[in-house]
Image 1 (cartoon, rainbow, N blue to C red):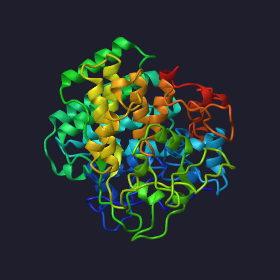
Image 2 (cartoon, rainbow, N blue to C red; image 1 turned 180 degrees about the vertical axis):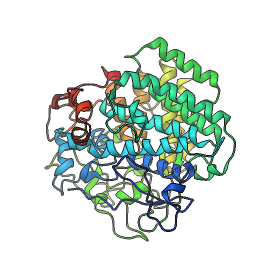
Image 3 (spheres, rainbow, N blue to C red; image 1 turned 90 degrees about the vertical axis):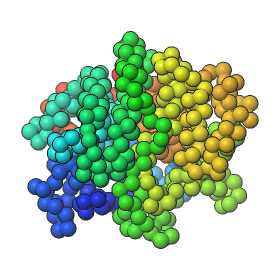
Length: 502
């Protein structure tokens, strides 16, 4: 089985310790003798913890119970796999056999909704003219999209009213998606009207920058709209994209890095390191560091295009060559051993944590231009996306190295100028850039575009396709039975596509 590392605690600037929970109440430790009482909390005491919790969902924080993470999507997208020196059990076996029970989604559901409640608190309890209500609304929108993209119809309109409604009804995914655009418009208005306040100290991602939060909101809006191409209302998508252009702040061109004060001490290491890295002060590797290794499918693809990022995603196996496992294969042995995570992912125990990458934003822009939805140069945006990926991973001389990688290649999946399928080239490079950093985005792209093509998703069940969604969590059937039962979901709905992929 895989091992959960102790949950990470984060000291927010106010001195408040922010924790995770699965109940519908403020996500705080009200018993902290060194912090304010729960009745004294304001939005600035909570916002940094919400940003950090959003990062934790991307970082595979608890694989053994499938809680609070998108690890399943990283594995399904062939980035890494179980070292077959370990036997699968529990949620790992569910992932590999695609036999996901309702309980598999319990942790994600609880964690995401709990963060939504915290962000509601920030919206309603921040200083006058603070940037936090607008920023929290934008972040909350991203989280709601993540819920829809995993589960489909979810509690939404009534879920914005805790604690008054403890058994919220479900809204349709299409209705939610439309309102998420409205929420982002409101966020942009609030951000634009904000002024510097003491609340800015809790913005541990953009330090109160109006422009960067506006670009974040616009980029999340772009992500929502691209999901609906080509299966949505194209006139609506084009109109909304035109509104983004008219708004004028543009899209993200820098990484969204969260830094609440990570340190190389127990419970304060940066999230990815605290799960897949090493104990403080050069300590022993955490067991997930050995449990997960490179997926051979991903390594083979990087080899086929001579991609130098391989040395940053993963380390050499036994200092000789790169070796991986096949997802779900208990009998695959790579000569020379297997490759653990490399220095581009395990950067340092005190490194800032990535919430949203510049590469992802630039590749989305490239896709929109390539589809004729935005004006500009898809080739230039593509080039910038590859450069941004090299830069984040810390590739030596990142920009020249990325440019040489592209210009020297005769492969159309690298060199945009010789590509015979520009959209495929964009999507494959986006997939590479998201290795272990945003598996849910890669999984969503695969569902809507079919890229990357994966011949054998799992060797545990060859011939079986990757599920299209998660089932509603078991906790909903015990705590909100009437409303979840009204969705009439069965186990076969694992393969019922989310509306934007139908």
